[in-house]
Image 1: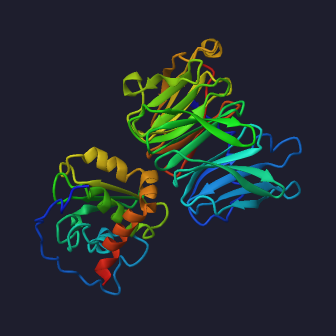
Image 2: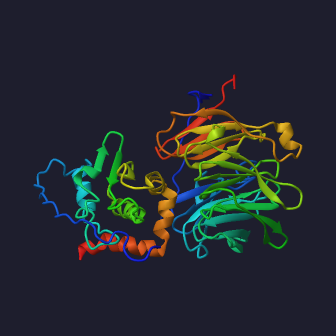
Length: 297
Length: 155
């Protein structure tokens, strides 16, 4: 893989101020930011609130449209919009996950998901918006079914990780769930028909996996490749066979393709694979790096 | 939680003499001086005993190393015994005390001295996981303990 060529540049557009403590996570609202629909962004913070920002069509600058407060009693660690953009789920160190709905000018908390024993770290909606996954320091991954009337029902509690689970992410097209953890592994979870979820693969050190906490994972647009990042200072690219995945065979195996090392000298906390094929990484060395695949793969 | 003190008979050392800094000290500017950092942390009280980390030799001047060019600070501390379950609390106290002391680009790593703790790797991993540290400091019980360790020396 080669570094992105010089014609690419990241330009800071605006600094959004308002949060009173560390901002842990941001999420773009789906179906906004093009075709005349103003871009909308959610951010969540150690100040226990979530802010929703909207870009002004005339000036192009983002303004804070809503502050979602008085619900979480500790840091809000991450937020995720449902695929339709109608709901926003927020995960908190207070052990709950709140689900918010845009009602008029404001956001209302329509549901609170309880069950985790301690800090909830990540949430992910599946592609159809019918399932929600959460994970946390209690080492478990929970899968919730989205029912009519903003009701949520837990369908499975997945045990398997031996430490704090940092992030969960659904596959972009199939109902296959991925999780990554302080136990240095990535786990793949699939269902065999009757709401019976189990771990179908574990990517550990022995499989060319990471040697320290895996903080994040992200899929490419087609869903046959995945990027992961870690406290071991590397990014890893993994691949699977697209046809096997799509055939509904949950246990299509994932294999290590390559490791990107030497680009960050401190923990890499975040990785995201854009629809156009650029991988962005963010690390504790205060750097954001962009990667693109060269012609040879 | 074990009942009673983990280490009931710690060895206590005399406090080292403090050097008063002259007013025209060349270090009295933005430079990050290991001795200045040491001054900030030496009086943190041990979570279990009414003595400072310096008095218990948990910290010494040599505990602090600064790489000014890279913007890195490494603090190495020595728990009083190999199975000290307070090691993570001491680490949290150090982080909290030093929280607003440096320019934002400085990175602080906190580790136990090599060979000084039975679960060295596990303790170091927790102390340098910023999400775990942040969550721990939101826990009211831990927060209370940390506050006592940091501020009782000011009484």
